[in-house]
Image (tube, rainbow over all chains, first blue to last red; front, side, top):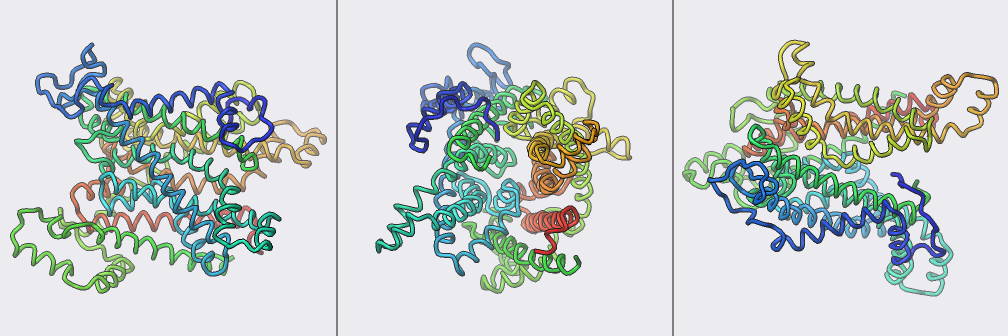
Length: 291
Length: 311
């Protein structure tokens, strides 16, 4: 997308994890983005200690309360503490957001490497299916599959994984095809290395950069998609909280209080924005050609 | 041209087939008996037996699959389990609202996004450009249902400028109802199309023919629009097609926020009510629209860039 500022003092040997991390933290936008992500991950991990109330405990004595010292973001139509639901909701949103693109990268990456390395009929078949699935926007594909499959944690993970797999497969395939022509791969083949070893040692490390960039950018998409599916009622199922279904329940109670909607939506926006900034910076460092 | 299109049309058949198979698989993969899912745990065994017979659930999976494919290809989606209305009627009633919303959002998105992108490109790295970058960063991060909810809270609920639910009757009333949902969907279009026109314009503005145009003394607006933007149209036309599709998928959530009728709304309601024939019908309609839009994109592509036809 865009780098907020040009990376200052690019280190001599880009590519290793440490140098990438240093370059990100070097610039203000990167530092802020990393801090936001770390903060939210900590909130998700420490939810039981941070949440002032039980996110599921209902109290009919304090329904639709406006923010007070006891309930910093007020309560919802069941008298549940909104802040606590928000804190617990970060768990579902973040776990699904990180898990599904990772699974998709593994599955799609494997398919793409196999198709790109071996070519032939496998390649044609994989490319064909990728092209067909890529015709659909991820959200629509996710909605269509979730429509048939229904909600729930693992279903959402499965749906998002299917939605993201073709993209990873396409990138992995293209990168593998270009890496395969490199002299070091030819040398490895000439040296008589077995094919699986060539793929693991010489191909995979050299196509990792674009995959990692995509993984970061799509983690942001996955968090937004999970929220959308939960909002539509086909993601995380109540009473479990997720940022999307907090907004869904808030909308049916909009005449009483709008705090749940405003807070949950802000959380989604901030996290998604931080992760996409990170993705952009990483793309600028690792994969300058795409830009 | 006709032959090219025909080949493309044939090409889309496997896509439809794949989607149909995915839908069938997903619906049959569900643990538990669809009959119990629809009729409830406490349904009498006789009722369940009748249901299973009526929907062919006693047949083998292959027979069910073939029957399913045949029904879908002949647009026989069955009748809704809830309202007993034919699914085709339900879709026909709802689809105009979705189309209307998509068109309105696209009009706002194009007329906002392209000029903004041009403005940002012309003022590269100055205040307008930086402002636009920030705008598009936020525009990409805000989920449209959240943006819709904010617009609803501020402009409909608190200020009372716009109606809170429904789609309205008569032209002016419908226009009044469509403003907020269309704006919601348009925001992402403005960010997306703006950024696309910014980058493609910047790419073109460095070319020789633009320099030649300037050297000939053409005025700057003419250079930008006649020599620059026209040559940036190719990536933009792809972006437009993509935009239609994301608007369509966004409309599902936005219809829910503004309580508007539409195919997305129909699909979501059907999911809540486990109305399987309507779910199937809705999914097929969306998949067909995607294939159709992709096909139209190909046509536009060939029209804008005749070189493709030769390949």
